[in-house]
Length: 148
Figure (cartoon, rainbow, N blue to C red):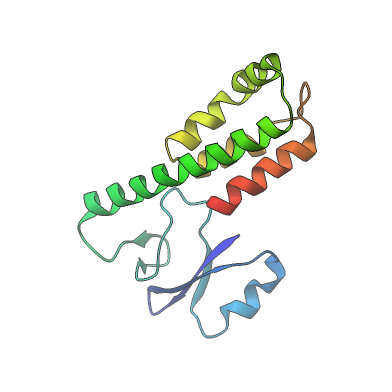
């Protein structure tokens, strides 16, 4: 889970916490600590926070959004290569590979487009089927989370 530490209305730090019980420890010295990894537009250091919404430090929204999309698209190639290589090493048959594309095409599309939060959401709502086990789903979720 990724959190923004906010002081004086500005994001001063971004941290990753694996234990939600540590949130209060990392709130010390800050006005707010807000979970940001589930937001559609992930705030960065320097963004403002008004108590409800985050805003980038610049009025150049188009550039900020374009840069974020480009960054996600570049990472999407790495994620897909990682997933494809892992699945190839499992020794999947052509029929199993085809089954994966049918069952997880929605997730693959979202990864390819750089829509990582919605890809993760879709993946977390999948249930094991065919040869796909919960262990495999959990591993794919962890891989995707490492890039988000």
